[in-house]
Amino acid sequence: MSVDNIKKTRDRLNAVGPGFCAMKWLHQTLYLHTGDNHSCYHPRPHHIPLDEIAVDSSALHNTKWKKEQRKTMLEGGRPDECYYCWNIEDLDGDQISDRMIHSSSDFAVDEIENLAKLPWDAPINPRYLEVSFGNGCNYRCGYCCPQASTLWMDEIKKHGNYDLTYNQYGIEFLDNGTYYGPKDDNPYIEAFWKWWPSLRKDLHTLRITGGEPLMNPGAMQFFDLLEKEPAPQLEISLNSNLGVTTAKMDRLYDRIQSLLDQGKIRKFSLFTSIEGWGAQAEYMRTGLKCDHWERNFTQAIERGFKVNIMCTFNVLCVATFDKFLSKVIEWRRKYGKEALGFDTPYLKEPHHWMINILPDSFKFYMDEHLKYMNTNNEYFTDVEIAKMQRVRDYMYQNPIYSDKIEKGRRDFYSFFSENDKRVGLNLLEVFPQYEDFYNQCKQVYDNWPKD
Image 1 (cartoon, rainbow, N blue to C red):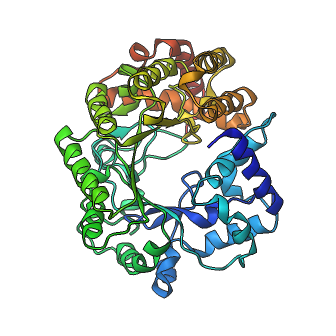
Image 2 (image 1 turned 30 degrees about the vertical axis):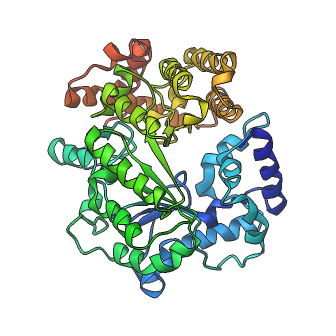
């Protein structure tokens, strides 16, 4: 996929409407343990009403809410929930958004005109499904949440919530009947397996996620199922934090290779996440050990599987991302450019993890990262460089309202000062570049109106 091809897709999308995106029809991320979904991972998840799946199990994807968003797109509008892409498209310059990038995927690009002809309320099976069976996880990534991590859930139960204006870490969902543990009767899982015989015929890619899917038994049921009921057209992807034992990863690779050798699946891809290297990366993701992560990472490549790294570009990346870029070059020199890919979506919430809360003095770091990638462009694709360019432009042009920035700075101090106590670390020892900003945030916090 090249930037030129993405721009051609953009033109085809815009011929339907300036907000049209194939992902509203063809892509879904589904959280079966909470009964939530979104059409891609950028809009906030919305809850799937039980009465809808009681009538039609495909309502796990085709909710009334999502159909209304499709209607808006077909009528030339831009759904509010898709602001992640509008933020990028409204910047100066010829920007490429994820609406354009993901609609250029091989499972989507040839469907654009056909989707535009469908009635807005027509049900459809996704071609790309990302599904989570549970939030069991051995990591506690700073910008994650209890809905996606049992380590986060257990911490909030023990220590209570953080003093924040944006409550991403609350566990109220445990009390309102919208969370199903691994031993609970789960109507969403029942509906999923009812939907599966129809769904599997249209799926291009099934991506299993979590939590950490290798800790969730439901996720592994798919491998048993594919042994009995092969899907030769299906690409299997797996999101893993690579924090489980190397032996467990090796057993997974053996199983995947067996399915591939027997022609029971078409392809396998591994996705993982990291936003830095060394102490900085381990601070952002409690539980991460870079040496162990790298062993599991290189093991996958040496077994012949492509690994895609998802870098959620956040406030702590800005001054430290050069270390990660150096590692990418090191790995690509050793294993080749095609062995691994990486993506740099900007983080949009919670506020205290957004890059937009940083002062102008941090902007030069973004210029240095972009300069480094352009200088070493034999190791980076044009799309990877374009994505870093848009993150840089997003920080420079900063479309975020000032009140959200002030809340983010207030919460930055509140969160990280409390976080350091809970995890036994010191932000400024790991990120000394942030000392002046940390003190600035403390002043905002100290002057914040008290309830």
